[in-house]
Length: 153
Image (cartoon, rainbow, N blue to C red; front, side, top):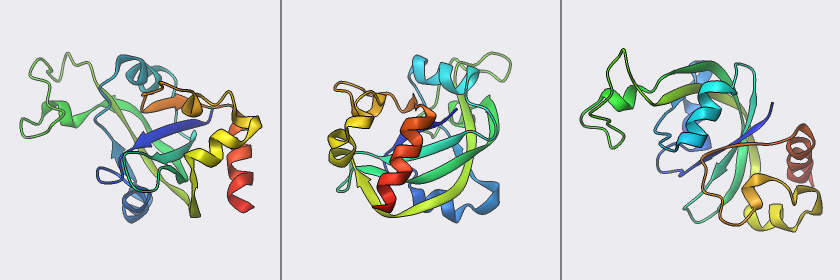
């Protein structure tokens, strides 16, 4: 299943994912229960992910990553110096999950959110719907393929 992972590039950009090489990066810090449930229950190794940059000068899809490690305990919840620290979390009982992703492709240009919204075939993509704040969102194969096509035009 394809996904959209939304990130602020100052935290984890498409370039950060690429710099991590084959080991990939830990996609951590997800603190919304619905997004957490997607990570925990539905995201699997091999899934492709559109990386969407938000809260930045150029908002949009910057590339594609692939899940290389399925859900595991988000290490940031145990780190007291982390903004994602959860004082209730223990290694036996925790709420938050992470996955690992590695770079598949960095697009030659960011496909902007405005371009995504202007494409009729993406009207049902969760990312373009108003009020969506989830950092992990499902996409259909058709939506994923259409985004890839738009990056080539």
